[in-house]
Image (cartoon, rainbow, N blue to C red):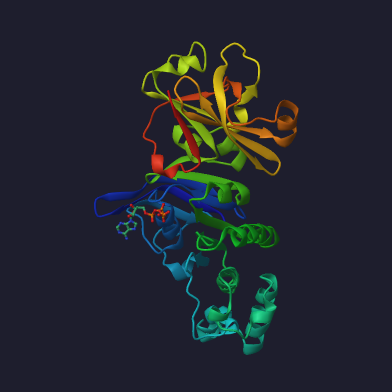
Length: 357
Ligand SMILES: Nc1ncnc2c1ncn2[C@@H]1O[C@H](COP(=O)(O)OP(=O)(O)OP(=O)(O)O)[C@@H](O)[C@H]1O
């Protein structure tokens, strides 16, 4: 099912949670709503589900106006972060629930329900747990059952709100791959909320970057990562070095910035050399982290002692390294991207290495 969101806004009392959002989601797309806490992701998901009604704007499903239709009419399936399966029901009964409560006219026979539940258990690769209770499953298994339960009613749209948020890193990673494959098999239009940029970049076909109730950018993971539209998107997606203030000219010759500007440089764009060149910045090695195929090097600027992160492929590091704490190097930051400064949520940037000039 294709979804069009046209000029949708939602206020809670005087607070504008969602502000004039326009978004077109083609059938079968896998969309991530990505943004910091409070940016309106869940509210937008709930508006699509029909759990909230917008103050203005329209929501179309396959070009038909569904703005004021209730949840039941929308054919959506949900999975939430803490999706409470019914504790007193077996896994089989949990998955069958949505089918059993259908009005008699639309209710499948007992045999059909059984067939469907076992098909779904096979799909989520948990056939062996049919007779267990939710408390006898791991967190990851419970989320897979939650998904099976959401799929039982043949939804045309799947809405997932931080579905793996409460799970540990390894299980999250496994479930991401699993969900991606499941989506490829079923091709149901899927929208998931996350504040985890890696999760969005890894899983989604389309990323909608949200901030303060508004959409900052819509694009493929590559588009939003490689060609961010503004400073917010640049700083929110991926690891980044941030440069502020007047003296950016020392990094990028001829670039004189006032306080209203901010510059960004991805760690892999910081080029290190043992030899000084035009515009290169003298730095000192602070820490070397070797992480699989790449090597991250924290370097300290000698002019102001702030840290910058550089990332090299393991091959490149073998060619120009090894480096040790205290080694003197030169960093070339020529590909720095400069934006006019706008409000940036500092605490939403855990992976940023900030360098204030
Ligand atoms: N029912 C409500 N009543 C009042 N304010 C609300 C309500 N629901 C959400 N809000 C406010 O709207 C804003 C957006 O909330 P929302 O849950 O959509 O954000 P989010 O991006 O999903 O955040 P998080 O990642 O923390 O879940 C927040 O400031 C929140 O406090």
